[in-house]
Image 1: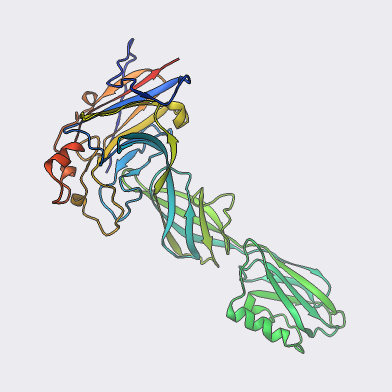
Image 2 (image 1 turned 120 degrees about the vertical axis):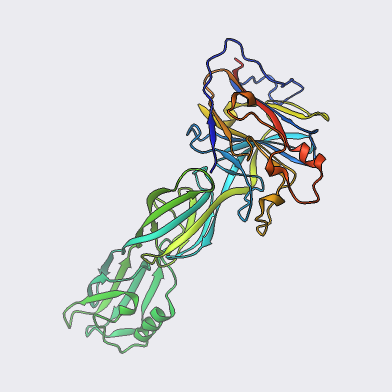
Length: 422
């Protein structure tokens, strides 16, 4: 289980900015109001071919969850980080860049009529959603026009659309007199069984009966004989279902339950979607059926530009940069981790954490730091209950990794400074 360190410090009259020389800047004359500066020091020299991340969680929950390293597959996501990450600064190949983290939803197990998942959930946490289809609310069936049909009861039809039925005065269906048009949202093509029932009526000469459309889940009430000439149009509204939701975060914290609704035969979110921001595609829904949706950080991220200030390592063991907090949405609190790795891993068959050479804050990399950004302060490794050491067990990696490789990603010291510039 991930741990978190919520650091409470007294206000200092003077704040020391640790190791961030103004040797590079993207700000020009635009001076930020408040900034976050960081330093990260490693046992060996920084290697430009390896990957270094300052992972930031600006979702405002003050450390309920936060950034974590990916310890093992098969859900590698972006290849290095998981948990709750909204932004990150990457140093790689001699360049610092700031990104907004993107997330992606994928269907791990279809069920209950849920057939696909896509889009970006608004919740920043990674993990798995288990969805259970509850009670159905069948779409109302209404009748307009003339013809043999006075009213309709929807007994089981989840296919929204319009069904036109043309009959003569005796209630005999005209040849080719039945047509179905699926609704743009909530409709689908007729199944083979449904189409066969329509084809039988369209052959002509069939007297319409209350159960003539039973294969479509519709029960008819007919007008009196002799007054059945014309075309009746049946309109079936979309069917919806209640959905129970259980979210299991990747690591840390317990399961979270919630509820939502889905529309049958649709990819359009309802006003209360089970996973806000994600797009779930459905066919006819099945009460009691379950589906599993996996949410991970996407392989790609949205580039926001360089940090406000940065210091190239220049063969040293230290990274240093300064971020404009407005870039992160001016959060009032942050959870932060420093994650380094010799490789980005996307191969889902790799499930042994010893094949992944990485390090982050704490002995296992799970001790992300949480602090307020509203007051000037400096937080260092020495403020933690477990000051950063070297030779963490996460650094083993595959046999091809040398000790020099491990040293280049072995985090041994860090600091964060929040300060006002104007």
